[in-house]
Amino acid sequence: MKFTRDESVTFFKEHNKDEMHFRHALAVEATMRHFARLYGEDEELWARAGLLHDIDWETTKSVENGHPVRGGEMLRERGYEEEIVRAELAHGWEFSGVEPKSRMEKTLYAIDELTGLITAVALVRPSRSISDLEVKSVRKKWKDKTFARGVDRSVIEKGSAIMGESIEFLIENTIEALRPVEKEIGLGPQ
Image 1: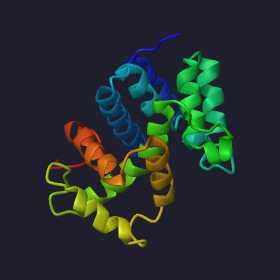
Image 2: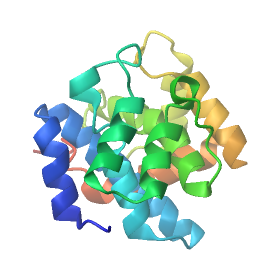
Image 3: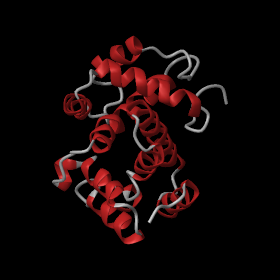
């Protein structure tokens, strides 16, 4: 069954009350939509996969408590497409055992952590904006292991490798994807 974006947002918000988690979901949604367009894939399907990828986060709060496996179960129980269920599971494949195989799964795996890093970089800039953010600024912060400690850079590197795309390409396109939704994800002049 195909759900609308509004239905998917409602479903996400039923299980996630923290605005920060919703902003992350919006960032990943926008980035997945961008990459789908870039690759000539189904934008709505990819966007829903991005929006819902952490559906279980406030329920589980960690991989030790079942993330993303519980999320896959929740999506399957609700009737979401198997492609979205697999993408949910594959974005945490080290814990779910579901290795990313499709282009959508590989992309979600690669960009999930990257959206967090790029958002963090934007937040410490004087402009708090993505509009003037460049790849070199993200790469500079990438090297600082004390910056955005929660971002697992090795996952981004592994994602880059399985996608067959450079990290610079992923950063550049993720920045581009986030620019139109800057305000919705809490960046830029508020």
